[in-house]
Length: 171
Image (tube, rainbow, N blue to C red; front, side, top):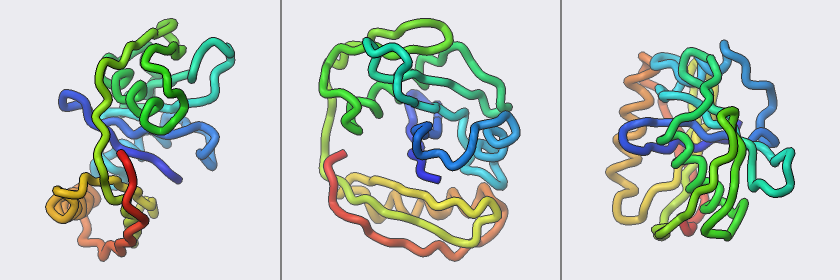
């Protein structure tokens, strides 16, 4: 399973692309993914999929950590919007996405891009998830060490994490 964990004003969301998921997101799966001990300790899951309406860039579903579906989250929507722009779903500064609450029409004023290093972490985590992480070049060692400590702290074990450097990328 491929996902990214983003943060906006203190809210951590997992962002997944529907086409990349090997399973349907169910309330129990969302709870497990967001859980502190066997998951990655998140405030929810943002699921992006190709839009049903061709005038939109994407459809966005927002799941709370208890597995229920939310109509809208301002911070979650902000994370999804920047993800869509950075991952090339659109180059437009103004576009439209669909949520349960209705259409959102964001305008991106400034999109900071910086060089980073993409890593893959995998280990004997009880959830058996692989983590892909992109870190800014100047913070990579410090943040990678903190991430490993956080992952070990939340799953209640001391996992030996294998780390593979993918490549230097624009984030």
